[in-house]
Image (cartoon, rainbow, N blue to C red; front, side):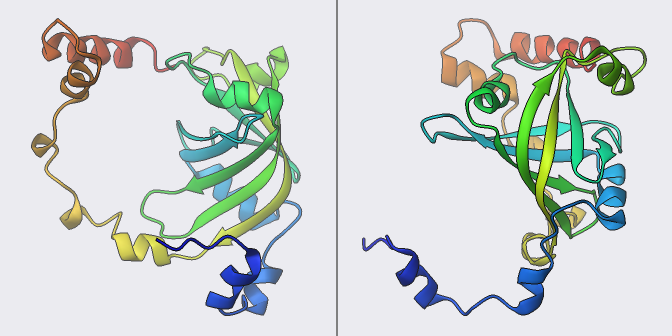
Length: 204
């Protein structure tokens, strides 16, 4: 297989980007970006460690959970999870992050690139609390670039079209998959029960 290894060769395959595609990149959050973030219940965070190993993690909560502090700063709470801390540890050595905000039913997305820092600031964590439960820390992103992304990927995938969704019963449960991957001795139902209990008790 022949791989593309230079920018010149890559660019020779594609047309130059249109003027609007270049000009739409903003250096700060305008009213449309802030409105989008305020309505979004879900964001994907791309990061990488000091050796260039990449990671993408999902963060989701009630719409508006990502707080726009000002037109150049976003705070994202870190809710209870598996404590791997992949994204958080990456940020400590490489602050560059990419965010992709989604709104269910909307085919357009918002992309934000910037530099992130971690804080357990009491006042900020209080502002990010849910039902009196504060996050252990927050990811504070200084915006370097923000732009709205067109709908083509979502139209091609028909992501929000219920008619394209699979019957969940045709896929194994997470407990079944973990049992196979980790060669767990207990029945998969035990793992599924543990997961359900965790979901009920430690969402926030």
